[in-house]
Length: 491
Image (cartoon, rainbow, N blue to C red):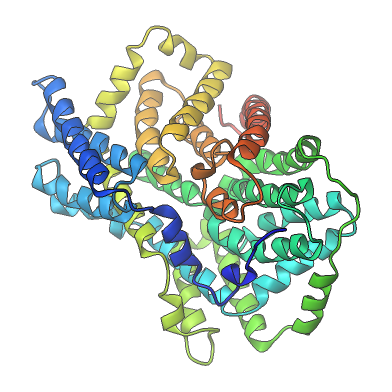
């Protein structure tokens, strides 16, 4: 039987610290020192190998990037600590000024992530998340296929108001686990695997369609603004991505039961019904929370009119949630978030800025273009999309952190796009969406990391399902790029 403690994910649990534990498993001291020394060696090798006629700032920036990616991949020290090391290294090694090294922390993306975590804390302080999760499964319940559809759709709906895939996963996981526990399913049950993997992949897909729905989206929009001066608004993003978002949900719903045939067609959701009845009518706190979320979404949707950056409505929502009388929780609850992720985002954005300002991104783009056949391949629309998707997936297998993938790969590929006369928005959007579909390895996405701790599925289970979903996502993205994007002028 499953040994699952539901209170691990309850509203009163500290999800953020739990996620921080998942991010960092202490290594033996000797291994830590070896990996830190290796990072220094990587920096020195890059500095020595690069042509002497290049500026020191350019060579130092590439060296710091290479060393930091090594540390972010292997995690001998916490990700946030590596991020602080990057911030210190940039001015110490004369790669850039202190102002540029800190510029990521004055960026809207950093504050959107911070505010998004705080909004989630506000929602978690009410029973709104639990109510929605239980209702979603009950609404489609009665059959395994219906419940799976509910599990897939629920994070898509939550993406309207909760700008973090990890938080959406932690909000929905208790309800899914309640079904599994109440049905007394064994550890190897295909039904349990269906529901948990459905939540995992559904949460990943939920980040595609809306600009604030995933960290990668916000970072991509920021890069486009900083590098190209091109603004991407809420409905612009939705107009580009909706076919991929729309079709990946039913495709996942069709593929998973083929790979994990359910032992029975009937689903037991009585426990969820009991919990929902015990919650009763919407409380005053829940109503206030809903109104604040509705205001936030309304401001996001009308961004093209009032020109307020995406972070501003999220910050306003955080303030309203913490205001005495108006709000739904206290400041002490709101500030109890994963600050390490905020530091990681700020440092990553600073590094991306240094790559562009020093000319490092432009230099690396030129070096990549020197590979035989790459120039011709990128000039063909069909091959361009396929190459970008395959490149992103391979890079994401090595560099598992989504932020690092976006902030190191997109600036270089944007420079290549500008050199070849390719639409840079097409390049950025293709890489961004492919990054969100990290279906193969557990560590590629936070939903995978979170749900894996239940012990219900194995890495092999995820790889098996992820292979077919990755292939399906490639087909959907290629069709979207060849059919829909030219219709809206993205070609």
